[in-house]
Image 1 (cartoon, rainbow, N blue to C red):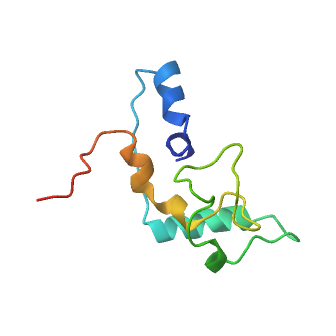
Image 2 (tube, one colour):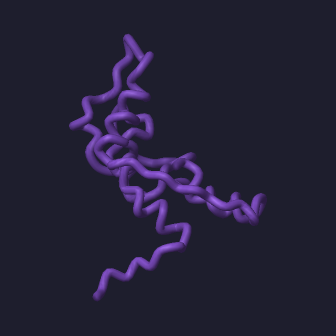
Length: 104
């Protein structure tokens, strides 16, 4: 979800809507990326977005966040479409609801 993927998203929610409760639903990352890619590809003819194999990895160099401004180096032809967006654990960990310690 974009709201918790941006650097300022959660800060804005806590500032303006401090009592808000979130219900989080996730999809399998591969199914999510396929749907996300098709959503962005639909209706762009004659323009085309890169082949999915060219979108593996981060959307922007050096950032785990969804970039919203001053994004620096972006993958060629990419409009915020990349496989790293399916790394839901990063965005969800920012809610601080689940311990991230993996030790036994």
